[in-house]
Length: 212
Image 1 (cartoon, helix red, strand yellow):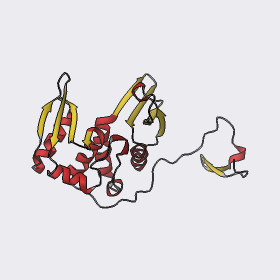
Image 2 (image 1 turned 90 degrees about the vertical axis):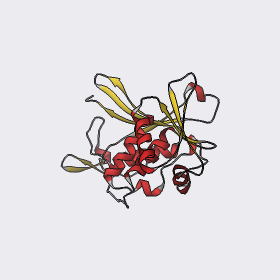
Image 3 (image 1 turned 90 degrees about the horizontal axis):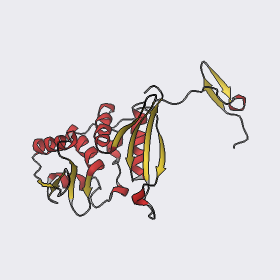
Image 4 (image 1 turned 120 degrees about the horizontal axis):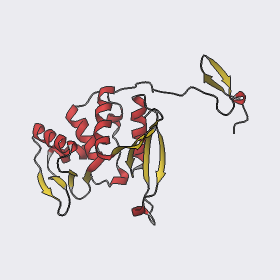
């Protein structure tokens, strides 16, 4: 508590915060100023988003997704267009497929140049140049990340769009990217059963609508 009354925007006027009552409607920021940087190649934007989602970058550089998923097809198309060789493995006992890149491949070199090689899921981040993409490429990056780790859940009048990650930095960066698109969110921590007894947390970036 600051001990002062601050101006809060309401419909058509500013109101001292001390005069507000429970249930009063106030304005909120819907979109951040667009301080964009240089555009990147579309394929690189999408590739980065997919790898931040379901990519492995520690001992083995690869990408894992369910067979037949749109994200897997998109990754194959990017590799074909860029001439990036990979080996494909079916994961025994599952419906998942691994695309694995050699450490000397163009894919690995790209990730290494961004400082991402060797990082586990809890340390993943969006490199600075990709936080300042033009807005149309911000959408591409968010779509690729969401294709791996996002979902829509709920029913009726209570529906949530949720992006989940175990990287606190990536969660905040996703929130920032969505702000650039005019999408307000909130972040909350969750401890799944698999993480109990460890320091790991899941961070849920949530967009909620009462209209469904």
